[in-house]
Image 1 (cartoon, rainbow, N blue to C red):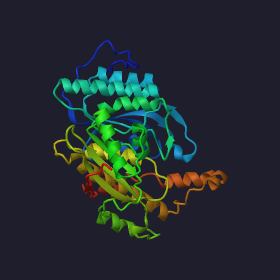
Image 2 (cartoon, helix red, strand yellow):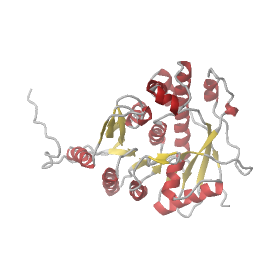
Image 3 (cartoon, rainbow, N blue to C red):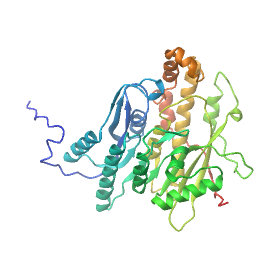
Image 4 (cartoon, helix red, strand yellow):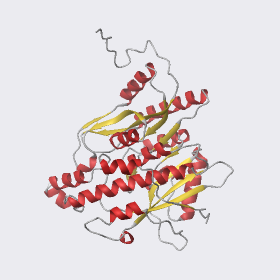
Length: 375
């Protein structure tokens, strides 16, 4: 059998294969990769495949493990390398996914390159009367700490008009809008600012703290399968004893009021990585633009159910194996193995029989449609 010579790093640019029909079940996922553990593409690819999606994964970093372990080795994919990879896909007519998912991208130059590709894909789809569904997870940081250089923030802002859905956490949403969420009226103001300034149809703020107030709506309790599994915890705390976080799914059409749905869920203690990556992938998988005005809320409810079930299973496994010792920086310094054990025990359980059920059963976390007050 004869094998054609291998051409790499753009050497095949003298020819190009015309892209065939856009494949509605294919996703181009551009985010981080770890050898051990489940963050970035490792957290997104298998769940997407389990739900019937073909995934073309481009890794923006190649790390041994996530940074929570305290020591990470590996490499970042440079802007030049990303250009080369995208060129190879383009030359072979392989940029034919109907959906695009982006997560952690290190450095302003790399973010710019990914943004250029998103513009290209969007333009090509629109020229053929099609829509690119782009879920943009603007990975900037969390809990008041930036994971990227400040120079990346304005570049991410420039990408927002390309997105169909963005999935920031509270810190990222506040950073992008340069506003704070301190109440329901400030939440409404922030959402409207992002929708109107950047022409974003759909926004999910994945988690935020809503200060106690008599004006806050009463939100539905966790679904029974979640409560049933929570009851198996060795610590056996009632769900009411857990602090809660809130998530919001917001859709907006100019000239119409905000369409917002709020969700409430328990805050599981401990450090977990990859939760936002999993949620964004599941949101993309479940989003059906033909499902009407509540399409985003339906996708968010399903994504939230599966994410919370996987997170709870991860927590319970860590408890059962004694690997869920609380965070303590001094003890971690004395015994680095302690930190490694904690991180290993909290790697998301996205593979396994139980996880498959959590990802595939199609149940939803119930939310409540709320008209956010203006003041």
